[in-house]
Image 1 (cartoon, helix red, strand yellow):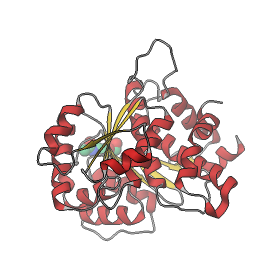
Image 2 (tube, rainbow, N blue to C red; image 1 turned 120 degrees about the vertical axis):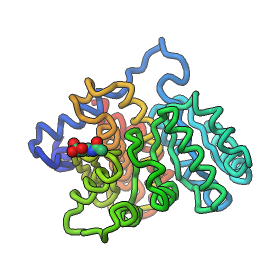
Image 3 (cartoon, rainbow, N blue to C red; image 1 turned 60 degrees about the horizontal axis):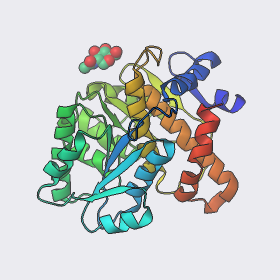
Image 4 (cartoon, rainbow, N blue to C red; image 1 turned 90 degrees about the vertical axis):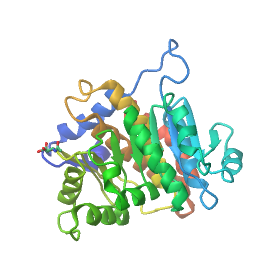
Length: 316
Ligand SMILES: *[C@@H]1O[C@H](CO)[C@@H](O)[C@H](O)[C@H]1NC(C)=O
């Protein structure tokens, strides 16, 4: 466990036992594989994103959800992006609805069948699409569907924080730029970069204690009460698409964590445990793919490592 011991620390308690415990909590939320289950039980994930310019991001998020262990992965994208995304993979269910005048209604009919929505990969900033996504977020909140928000989904939240404020089933996954924008929009204060962990805690509180994962050299995760840090060794390679691997994996882990409940997470907010698990997994796939491919590593190589990385971290 030496790699993992160095790898991360709890903000409030630093003992190695606590660190190991956090990994154990992730293991606790993973549903056992069983012949008695029916298709769909281990996760039906929806990714909202994908437009003419961006087709890779929603693909990476959706395929990562499958590789982590979801049974079904849907993509809700624009009409012209759909055939492209379908052509990447026969495993995804692709709905060309996001730029339709009935987008909100069309996605809503699927919401009852989805466990988690991942909003933002490859979304872009087209006003019509963002307006539709706003509607989709409202419907998801009304039905209590957990949402993971990334990329231009976060841009939308920075324009209108009230869209998500106080919705505890939301997890935001900003990189440094997105975090700064969000922080300044919500707290109306320039970001003080001297206390980074404190800033993540403050933003979470200001948004009503929803879970925030600030991706970076270390991933800082907070639910307004606790701060977890995941610094598992990855590599210095930062290829585009890694964030999508994180958001897609997180979609599945959020579902599993909420299903398991806080008895399985030792009283810790299940979403914190899910976020920690997804961060550790993304870092581990990065490390493994880097060992094989070095500088030429891309996100496709990382996706191929999800299975072994998952086993190594959570199933040994
Ligand atoms: C958020 O969590 C903090 C720490 O537990 C608590 O003091 C605060 O009241 C919570 N805020 C809301 C809106 O529940």
